[in-house]
Structure formats: structure tokens, C-alpha cells
Image (cartoon, rainbow, N blue to C red):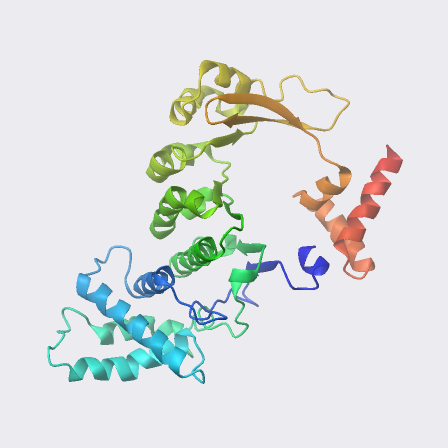
Length: 352
């Protein structure tokens, strides 16, 4: 809907399918500005491509990769005919940087920085490799200027090679926005947060985000349906809950027997507990609404009824039959989803 309304100028939807796998270019910026965070995130990405979660990264390895990233950035700034991408970075490492290492007066031992091992491991992301699409996007969309971006990564959450890389790129995109867009409100919303928190890198990024985002006029929001995952995650416990002034809970009746643990974790008072456990217990049967509890900073809380228009309901519904109905009508109307929603909403009102 946003893409249609802005003639494709806004609204970017990244998803992964076998036919069209998700693709990025972390080496591309419109203005060739690479601040410290951008360089560090590229280095972190490269270390993730190279090392498994169990491998320890030495200071020499981290330092050499950081130097290589700096040198490559200077190269593409000086020579704009070089297309910034993982492919050209890989070629720079394979040819120029490896030669420069060999020519140094103070030799770097392979035991300290094994560039051959690194190039062999990263080969699958280079031209002709099985993941060569991932970091070599030719679309070169600079996400800094896009107001609404969705990353749908549900289909790769079990992929141990792709998921960590993609989550780093997502967080780097937001950090870039957070630091460079001065005076503009920024929001990072992590839906089904437990999936993200299962990645060590993503968990560390979220910890960092919650401690710094407000300084940059930003908000970080996590959403989960699994209360157990909130309770068991040390990152949530130490960082997210302690730094969240606003907490929103939906119907908790299925967690009635374990609510004491939730109450303790969230620091809820007995009054707040009673409010939460009263949700949807006495709804008006003639009205279509759900109740929700909102707590603000431990000083104010209440249960509210949330009732939306038929148009808003149809725009957000996850009910498959309703979604199919919207898309089918939109197809008849030349792809106009908004017009389809308006027509269906009007039909519903007329039936009532």
C-alpha cells in the first residue's frame, strides 16, 4: 500500500524465496560516507562469514580485517569505476591485500592471520559460489532515505549460515539511520523477537540498541508471543526490560499458572497483576474489540479496549481467508489494495 501511494519511492520489502532470494550490498552508500559504525559493522559481518560461533577471533585477525576494510573503502572512493560489492572486496583481499601482506617488513604469520583460510571460507559468497547473491545486490538501494522497511526472514531462521549474516545487515541498516538522521524519529520493531534473540550477534545488537537508541531520538520495540522466551533470555532480562518504560500485554489467561514468574520479571504490582488478569473477562458481546493492558514507567497503568474501523481491520488481518479476499478483489481493481479494502469494508457495514 505504501509503495503504491508513493509511486515506489518509499516502502521496501525484503523477503527470502528460492526464486528470489534476499540480496543486499553492505558496501554501497549513495554518498560514499562510511562512518566508524559502518566500518565496524562491515568488519563484524566479515568475521561472521569467516568464523563459526565457537571460533575465537584474535586481536590480529580483527585488526587486519579492519585495516583491509579501511583500505578497500579508500580504494573505491578514489576510483569510482570500482563497483562496491562483496565481489570486488573479495578480489581486493585475494590480490592486493594478500600481496601487501607478503611484502611487509614485519611479517604476519599464518597462525596469527590466515588470509588463505579466510578467502577459502568466504568463497561461497563470491561470484559463482552458492551464496553469491547475498552480498552483491545490483539494485543498490540505499536504505538511509527509505522511511518504511520490512525484513521478512522467517524462512531462513533455521539456516545457520544465512540467518546470522542477514541479522547483522538489518541491524547495521538501522544503526546507520539512527546515527545519521538527525532530528528524525526512528523506530526499530522486532516482531517475534525470540527468533532474533536466538542469534548471539543480534542479541548483542539489541542490548546495544536499548542502551543508546533514545540518545538519537529513536525507539526500540520488541514483540513476542512466547512469554517463556522473555523469561529465559538474559538479554531481555538485563537490557530490554530495564530500559523499557512502556510495557503492553495482551490476554495472559493461558499463562495464569506461571504468571508469578512474569510478574516478578516485569516488576508488576499486585494492582497491575489484577488489571492484566482481568483482560477480556467481561467484554460486551455486541461489540467487536479486544482488551489490552498498558503500563507506563511503573506510575500509570490501565486496561483499554481496542476497537478499529473495518478498513484498518482488513489492512492488518492475518486471517488467511480474509487476506485472500482482499488480494482477489485488489487484482480485479488493477492491484489497488486500498480500493479493495474500502469496498470490502463498505460491504461489511451494509451487511450490518
